[in-house]
Length: 112
Length: 112
Image 1 (cartoon, each protein chain N blue to C red):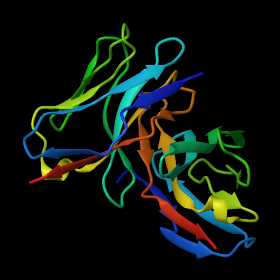
Image 2 (image 1 turned 180 degrees about the horizontal axis):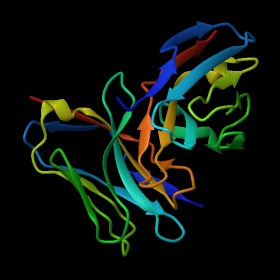
Image 3 (image 1 turned 135 degrees about the horizontal axis):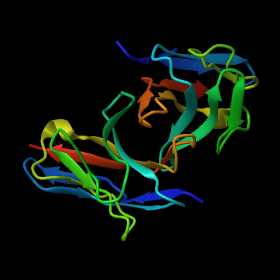
């Protein structure tokens, strides 16, 4: 079946540190891949996405590249800020008519 | 503003007392879905709907009902709530053209 595995948190970083949150997936065919972010007390917001192999999604300084050969979609940011503290979810959908499958989420805390 | 609206945001109820959580979207999306979020388990899909009068079970449908009588609304019904349904619930709708999901702000349900 389809599944997403992401690194367990919590991840604690100092401001301006480099961030990597690993995400690997199992899916049939060519899924679309997403990163969602959940700030405290809020719903999930789409952070970035990639719909085919080698695509790079980017937004707000975050990036992730769709790597089909390693079935990965790792999230990176060169310099995190306190305001990036949130829970990050990796997700996939195999096609437009199938449900979104989420990883378990990684909590990021950035300290000043 | 394009949004998914859930009500209520917070609800405390007693075991066995029927309740409904409402969800409404203003984006004319065909696809809508309900998720529950639990610590250590991430987001799990309860039910989804591909269009009006079309609903299907997700990963954890037991104890829940849904209906989709009109495109904009997708209520979640708990006929006889139990304490194991204490959770944070999210409604989402999706643009089938680009797979983007929009989430509501969540409903925190406590069943005592």
